[in-house]
Every structure is written in C-alpha cells, then in structure tokens.
Image (cartoon, rainbow, N blue to C red; front, side, top):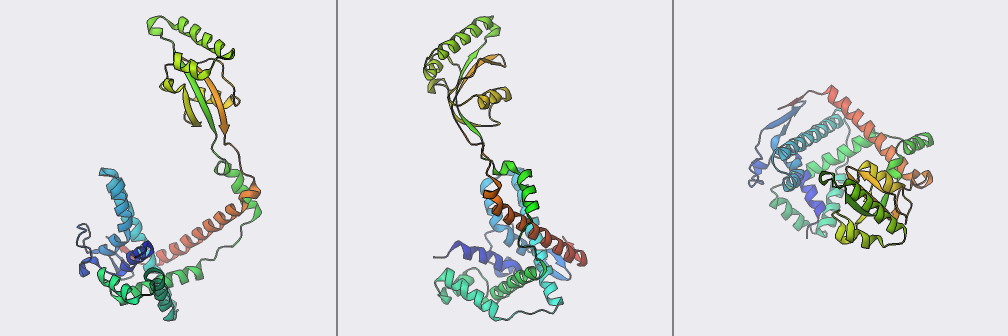
Length: 326
C-alpha cells in the first residue's frame, strides 16, 4: 500500500517535467504546456507550475466555488511559481559556487523512500514511477536538486539556536491572549418583551420584576424560563450552554461575565426587552505563566528568525537574477 508521503514526493518529482510531454495528466484539461517563467535563461513551464499547485487546487475545488475559487486558484499558482523560481535560483547558485555533493546522497535518499514507502521493493517503486510517467533518472535528478536546496539553505541561513530572555519576555507580554484560555460562561436566560407597540411596556416590566422576585425567593430558574421566557431557548429552560466572549450583545456580555458563578443578574433592559441571566458555571480566562510557555516561545522566535534570514537570502538571489514571468 502506498503511503501519502510518496504521493507528495511524486508531486515534487514533476517540478522539472512537462505533464503533456508524458501524457500523464490528460484528465486535467487546465494543464496547458507553455512558459511560465525564465530564470537566468532556464525555463519553468506551466505544466511544472500546475503540477506543484495541483494538491492545493484539488482541495480548493472541493471547498470553494465561483469567484472565490478562481481567486484562490490564481494565488495557489502564483505561490507555486515563486517556489519553482526560488528553487531554480538556489540550484544555479550551487553550480556558480562550484559546489558538489556525492552521488551516494541521492542513492541513500532513494533507498530510504523505497524502504519506507515500498517495504524495500525496488520493483514496486519503479512500477509506480512508470504509472506516473516519470523515469528513474528524472526522479533521481529532482531528489538531487532537493538535497542541493536543503544544503544551500543550511549553508546560507544560520539563525541563532536560542532566543534572548528579553525577546521571549517581550513576546509573552505582547501576545498574552495567545496563552490565555478562552473565557466562557454556562448561561441560562429569561427574556420578556416589553410589547411597547401594544401599550403594555409597564405591565411587561412589572411581570419581569415579579419573575425576578420569585427567582430571588427560590423559584426554579429552568421552570420559570419555560413558563415565561419568549427567548428561543424557552423549551430548554433558557439554557444557552457554554457561551464565550463576543457572542452576546455587549451589555448582556458585560452582565454575564460579571456575574459570579451560581448567581443571577438583576433585571437588564436592552433593545426594548427585559432579561434575567443566571450563570451556572464559568471556565477559562486563565493565562499560562511564562515559565510554562517559555520553551514554545523560544522555538517560535528561532523559527521566525530562520524564516526572515531565508527570505533575505532569497531576496538577494532574486535581485541578482534575470527573471521573466509570463
């Protein structure tokens, strides 16, 4: 059985091959061969771009339609083309610096793929390549270039492996919400409309105050909600379940989250209606201490620095290159 990893590898294999030349993707009518870009004289084809973007495109087509789909497809292909351009620039820089890698690196990688995805069956691996219309030499070339890209990144992108305590603390203070669990209340609610259009506003308010008095005297909230509330949760005894912030109207939210657990609010008048809230429970709103998240913050800062250094390095390669896109 072929693992998903190998399918991803096959997608990468096609970076330097044209699907139409092989007839591998005839079922995809949008793959039209042609020139997508020229990087220092090296051609990147539309087929290569579509091959790289294809997994993302399939996902988008299953989720979106119309203008939004077209917009996201365009963006997916733009990103795929940029990846191919950057790859070409890195391989060219490797050659310009007259660097070399032993051939056995590729053989080791191929043996690893065969062992992990084909149980060590080289014939099954070859048959899969043939089914995808790729030759062994094409696969080897692409794997070799992937190794080159990784080696060049390791050579030119060298971020610090630790982040300073000051930066860690600054990140923590600036992003406290990221380490704070969402605050929620388990809420029940009774809503009494004022019926002002019927001239009954005073009577409705009096009824709401009477209900509040009964609740204060020990009446069951759930039962009172079933009898008097005209909210959509009436049948369930006014049960709103767990409610997080930015769900209720601001005035109701302030009351709900300001009411202690197990307590009931006073009468709240909002939008011509009268509300009584009861907070059955509370959870969340706790911020993890810095000591608990320090390692995660440090890892993130190191990754962000690596990304920044890599982008600066690639920007330098792009600046020196002659790149034409079509």
